[in-house]
Length: 241
Ligand SMILES: C[S@@+](CC[C@H](N)C(=O)[O-])C[C@H]1O[C@@H](n2cnc3c(N)ncnc32)[C@H](O)[C@@H]1O
Image 1 (spheres, rainbow, N blue to C red):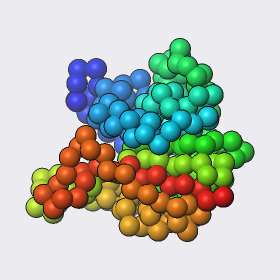
Image 2 (cartoon, protein in one colour):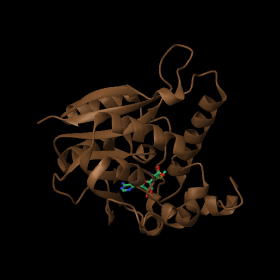
Image 3 (tube, protein in one colour):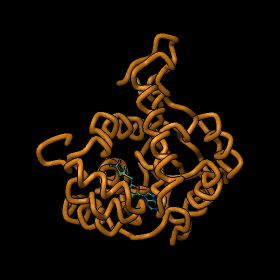
């Protein structure tokens, strides 16, 4: 499935019947050959947009997986980069893959809902992981990010505009989420992954409630939709002093 180096359909099924953490442990060796890894086009566009904001000292890649976002951080952070994820398997691949980066990258195994850090970072990024959190978990997640940022620090992540209702992509995402809901109603442990649950207006409101000031930066590399709205934006949430 996906590519010759990617997981087979059987492997994917076993992973989808596991918990999120265990599923990623199993997927880790082949993860970079799946479409679940954030594409380089998105990573590069976010890296360029972060570069336009300035340079940072300490960066954190939240739910770092195999380290795609941590590599982006090494381009814009001067002193250090940390990747945090709860899957030991994903961290092992990240450690091996992003070995010789400068500044050095540290890898920490922890749950994003209980981060083990002091307010030491001036930039936190996250790619491709918000579908693993239920809407009711967002306030806690954003409070955690707020607590590890220095005053005036930024939390940045890309958000893709939802596909219009008439499109194929719309029905595919709707179908995926429906299958996940059925799976989670009948099978334990749950595998939380919903594409349509992370909505920009709700996200913005919860970030503001957690003590952030929110800006939206269109990523010009991805153009605009027919109605003129950007296809992809970078959310930049600044921790108020
Ligand atoms: C789709 S992968 C994205 C990985 C990487 N950020 C990327 O863009 O390629 C989602 C990652 O989120 C991690 N994850 C999901 N829920 C988490 C949680 N509560 N705490 C820490 N990591 C979590 C998974 O282990 C997995 O590595």
